[in-house]
Length: 265
Ligand code: BV8
Ligand code: ZN
Image (cartoon, rainbow, N blue to C red; front, side, top):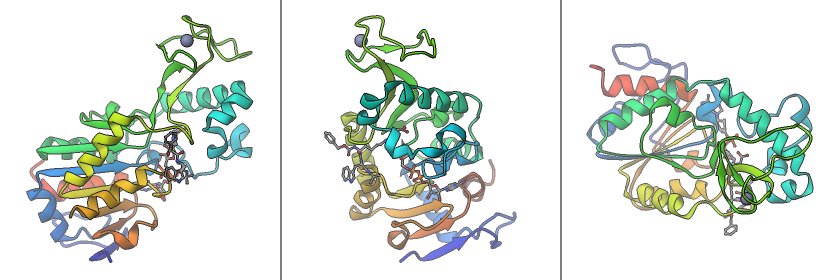
């Protein structure tokens, strides 16, 4: 059971008003840690203005569930619909910026000798914020590759009539993301498991912990003695297993935690 489940709104004893009661033992632990691993999910991008995976979709897409669109079967059945869905999401991502939670993780990375940021997000916002050691488990929606020969491309002719084709083999282009039913990139997953097992502290941030195999990483960390910290808007299946459950918005909690750990900035 978590040593303390803290929800937004409680004030702590620090010199500044943080949104949440940050346990002093967590602050002391983070400051003296040399190996920290972080896993983020869609909730970490929510305060940038991006819908999470489980948020209902808007407009044209409201009638679909993401899991029904993010799959090779959906692409085979209606490639144009899937290409348009990703084009719509790419435009939404181009219109947003990293939030304070992304930047707080950049600050944490500067201060922790061995810091690994594993993300399920495909929006590229961690890299845009300045994070360095990033493992993108589910790919990146801003990268596009050929569904046949795998050639990456940065530009394509979009006539809005059909899916753009590969210049090399004329196969249909697709986003460079991992669809449901597709394997995760082996190198990234192996490094993620290694970093989770080796961590002293493992943060699970903004993820419902539903999607596999990413959701196993927290358990890999815990089974190897890591202290688990969850920062999430609501409880998840992981909550009963963590040492610190900080429930609230990551864009508020993370900057507060960094300020509490390194007040001199
Ligand atoms: C695979 C890219 C095998 C596409 C995504 C067991 C083992 C292995 C596989 C499975 C398994 N059981 C089931 C499976 C199949 C499947 C799966 O997990 N299904 C689920 C639905 C049960 N897994 C797969 O298919 C994976 N592939 O295992 O292949 C294989 C092996 C060899 C050969 C062939 C096959 C592939 C999974 C990857 C799918 N791709 N994304 C795209 O984006 O279009 S996953 C997608 O979900 C996103 O990446 C997203 O990040 C991810 C996870 O969701 P979350 O990030 O957690 O987002 P969610 O909305 O759920 O939660 C957000 C949380 O944030 C909420 O709790 C909310 O409260 C909180 N929040 C909101 N706002 C804030 C906040 N918290 C803090 N602050 C806030 N402001
Ligand atoms: Zn091709």
